[in-house]
Image (cartoon, rainbow, N blue to C red; front, side, top):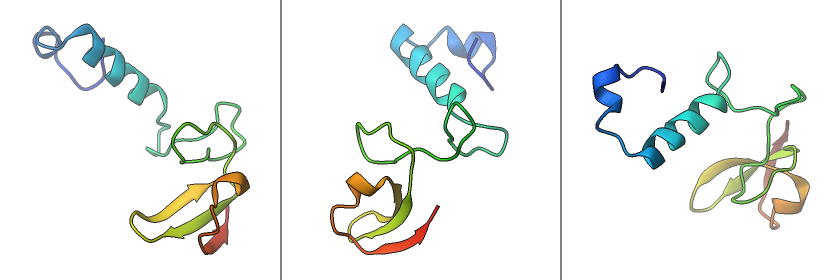
Length: 81
């Protein structure tokens, strides 16, 4: 069963939608922040990257983003994580 939904609510969802909700719920800790499964810290927020995060960058279109060194793409580093 997906979190925060009543059984009648989930009956209206497709199997794909239920899977998405389950994945989202599994990636959130009690504080609501995504973190590495081994508890070592945040993961890179770049699309398709699964490396641990190293820094927060200032992206011109998307604002602050937490990424690994390989995904900084020469954007300004704001701080280390």
